[in-house]
Every structure is written in C-alpha cells, then in structure tokens.
Length: 497
Ligand SMILES: [Zn+2]
Image (cartoon, rainbow, N blue to C red; front, top):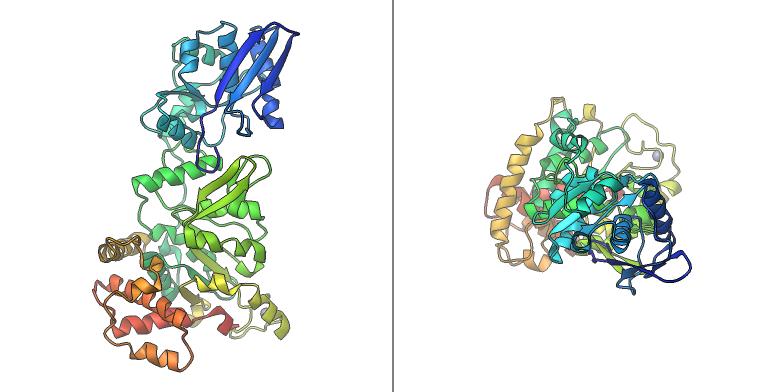
C-alpha cells in the first residue's frame, strides 16, 4: 500500500542448482528480508523441509521498494508450490496477506481491507487472510475469502480444502462491544455553546471554542460527531479503509458513523499528518476523515504541525513523500479547536486572578497563526455555566439535534445541487455572492464601516447566516440570521484575551 493505493506484488520462487541458500530479491527492506528466516522457521516448525538447494524468491515489480511483514504467507505459498508440497493452481490465482510467527501461527496485519479492495479491482476472485481478519476482509465484497490461522491451515487451503472460520473470530464479529456513547444531553448549563455546536454541525463549519479550563470544551467537541449524519456507503468504505491501514480492527464491520480524532498537543508531525520511518501510516487528520478533528489546547501544538493543516483544510487530502513515491491519504475533516484565554487559563474569568504577564498573554495569542484561524467560521467563548444563566438544565439529546442538522443539510444539498459543494462551510466567497442576497444587509454594512468586519469576514458571516436560515427552514437569509451569525463570528479568542 502506498497511501490508499494498493499495488499487487507477485511472489515467485525458484529452486535451482547451487549452494544451499535462500536469496530474496526485488527491493526488500530490512524487515522484509527477515521474512526469509521467519518463513523458514515456520516451515520447519510444521515438520516440512525447506529447499536444500539454491532458493530464489523474487518480488515483482522489482522497481517498487517493498516494506512490511505481510508478504510472509505469499512467500511460503510460493516456496511450498515450488517444492511440490502444494499444487500451484490455487496459490497462483490467490492474493495472500498475512505474517507468520516462528511457530507457524498466522498473525494479523494492518490494511487488509484496502489491500483486498485493490486485489478485487485487479481482478482477483480469491484471497487468503489471517483467520482473525476474515470479517474485515469480507467487507470487500466481490472476492471470496479463506481464513487461515496457522501454516497447516494454509497447506489445506492451497489444496483447495477451505478450513472453517475459527469460532472466536465469528463470535467477536457477532457481538460488537457495548461502549458508552457520549450524548449532547450530558452537557448541562451551556445552551449557547450547544447551539453553536449545532450550527457548526449543520453547515459543516469549523469551530473554535475558548474559555477557562473545565467549562466543557472537550465535552462539546466529543459530542459533535453525534450530531452528524451517518456516513454514506462510499464514505463508510473509505473511512474504514483508512482505519484498517492505521491498524484498527474492523471485526465489528464497516464504520458507519463519523469518526473522532483528538491528537495530543505533543503529537509529532508524522502522528498528525501521517508517515513514519519504515511503513507509512495515516495520521490523526486522516483518522478524522469524514468526521471531527479536535485539537485541545491548540496554542500548545507545534506551529509547524499546525501549519501542516493548511493544505488538507483546503484540499481534503494530504500527500507524504515516500521512497516508493507519493503516499496520499484522504483528510476531509471538521476542525474543532479549543484554547484557554491565556496560559494559566484565568484571564477574563470573573472572580479569578490571571497570573500571566501581558507579554506572555501576547505570546500565547500569537501561537495560533492567522491562516488557520482564518479557516474557522465560528468562534465561541464559553463562560462558566453559573454565569451564563439560571438555565442549568440538561441539554437536548443528540438524536433530536441531529434530526434538525440532517434537515438543514438536506436544504443545503438542494440549494447547492449542481455545484461541487454540499455544505455552507465549504462554499467559497464567489459562489456565496451568487445566492439570493439577504433581505437587509445594513447590519453588515455598519460592521464593515465600524471596522469590526473585514471583506473576508463578510463571507464567513454569510456562510453562517445561510446555515441559520437552513436550520430555520427558510430560503432566504433574514436580518435576524445575520445578527446571530455576526455574534458567532465576533467572539474572537484574541479579542477576549
Ligand atoms: Zn493567565
């Protein structure tokens, strides 16, 4: 796999005259070179003989650098076929994915789903995979799957005698773990913040939440996915494939809900955008693909890492240079950033004392670059709930809010039909001005005249205002929508600090 792109590697084995040794050719990396020893040990462990002549194992295309341990099954199958232990026909017409242990057990590997999608698209009809990953492999419809849990199973299968699915894997697939689901109803005493989150969900707007520690910023961010609609079939396959590449189990089936990814502020560049020394893996931004990326304590992230978000925010994907070429991962996420007002967190909090110097407050402010803040439509300041109002009631359940969000999204999709966009948050300024003009622009004109709104700011306000109109079920932006949108814009973190 190079990014999401799978290439079929053909494994050949040839036994010829020469000193007894095993040669592995075709640009293997060090880890792959160890496959030779692993396979030999596994074959010996199964009571079979490893060829005692010159054995050449060739991986083609030779020009493509190869890494990883998932070639073991294919290598052993080629060797067993070359030494006439198994017939050649099945081995030659199957795709094999899996790592071998020294004792002959078959180990699970990352990326089975995207690998099998590539195999299916290349015209293969049968795949042999680790028994524990039969369920995941089965998500790639149109290719028949044989699971093997040990080398003895592999030999059976290569003779055309499929072994039964191990009951453990089947049982695991049948009962997905009953995990606690966060719900917006848990958020108490923050009705304004819940509403801002609803607007963000409805229009696909990126959102910046700021306020003192403990006011509920992460609690809100965690609940944004619960307001979003289910993934479409195509999105679900794409999201599941990314998670498979990152090593997540898909034994409970395809992922149908938008994912949530919250990298720590110490996250390295590779952890954030993807990559890695030997084998490339998708990063946090790709694990948030079609879902939510939450950056808590955003000013604490390295400026370089934050800067790397700019391209994916624009293009919805990330490209990483590898020795084998460019690895490309999808990364179209909804961004939620959170920050304290200052390093100690108490600046501007009534009844609290900020211990920061004006200089350190400024430095803290400057850690978030303009270009990133610029991509965020909604800025919302959270106050400790006691100060907000006496309405310390439970929030609305996610399901009810999600229903309103779904309706608002349908209106957008209808209005934007025929354009490349589906959500207000994605619509560029030029396109916004082609939509019917709001009933009364005087509010915006005044804000611009007073220097409170830039030309770019107008686009953002219009985008939010359209989402508010969609939530109201109206086809035109009202003066009230504009006023509310201005409110969601001007709660700037920098002004607060
Ligand atoms: Zn402070």
